Amino acid sequence: MSRLTSGVAADAAHVPVPFEALPPEQVVAGSPSTRYVDLDEADGRTVGVWEHTPGVSRDVEADELFVVLAGSGRIEFEEPPLPPIELRPGSIVRLTAGMQTVWTVRETLRKVYVTP
Image (cartoon, rainbow, N blue to C red):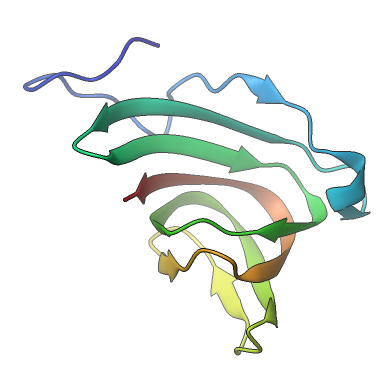
């Protein structure tokens, strides 16, 4: 996938996303994998598409705003302790760098993200 340029559109629900192995120490249950592709990088921000297949994994977050396009799941917060967030198409979520999370994905999750 080439980078987006002004006036060019991408169908984020169908952008091909290359496989990236999930480090074994992040896997909590099942055999989840993640995939992502950066679509645009400008002015210190990145826009991309990310997927997580069914299973449970841990992560330490970066600053990010995302919109769920497809799938379903749940984010639980180990640090700081916050209420869990249910994820479904249309969910908009803001994460802060350093948050320690557990992602439980029931149906392959696809999101569009923006990092500052």
